[in-house]
Image (tube, rainbow, N blue to C red; front, side):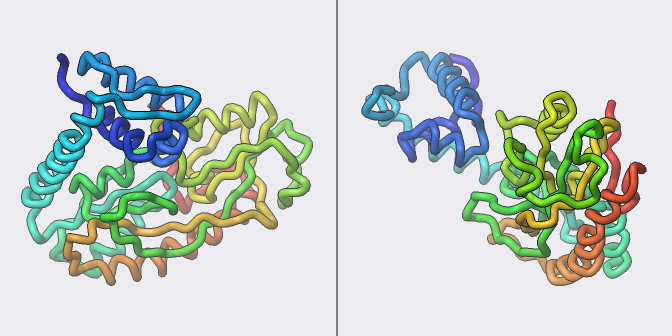
Length: 296
């Protein structure tokens, strides 16, 4: 038997809890085939079947039932170990922030450092898929996120709403417009929000589909500023929904600087995000309010 992969164990517990590959895949932000591959790999590693799937549904095998509690204990122990190691290794005078794509790290850090000159402020840049993991395992004290997110052990501090924009190929008939409604956009279109995770199409894949297949995408304004492609233009969405930007931290942690950090985010980042749709829709140049991606 090879070394156990904790990601596969998490997938096993998720399926065991719901007894549904479909619901478990949705909860974990995975595609169903990706989840099935993880379970199959775990079964090969353990040398036994864990689930029986039939027309009547999904059931745990005897082996699956026997190891389920141990799997839960192992995952809890691994998370506690990582959290303890990382949080005790950091000095009290350090504050580590997890920045997701589409947040202006430099401005936030400068303002926060200005209010707390004796505090060592670190920045960790996360992907859309792992921003929550960075909080739960203690790599960061607090992280930006787009809601909704799942873990109950996290405390959520709502910050502001972020408008969705329309990413559309420059060759699309609507590309010369400044503003478009959902009715004018029609179907089909892709939706990129907080649900981008392992196994889901990447933002690059979605934008490529917009260019090559002419299928528009709705994307948060911060991500639109971050993901700039030569063949894409962004339009203001007149009547679309918003996504909620929030901060997440482990509710068992005490963060003395929390109120100060939240205030800075609302004062500085909120207005910058609010102004992005008009800025992006009126210029073909990279936005200066958000960091631009550098491709290696």
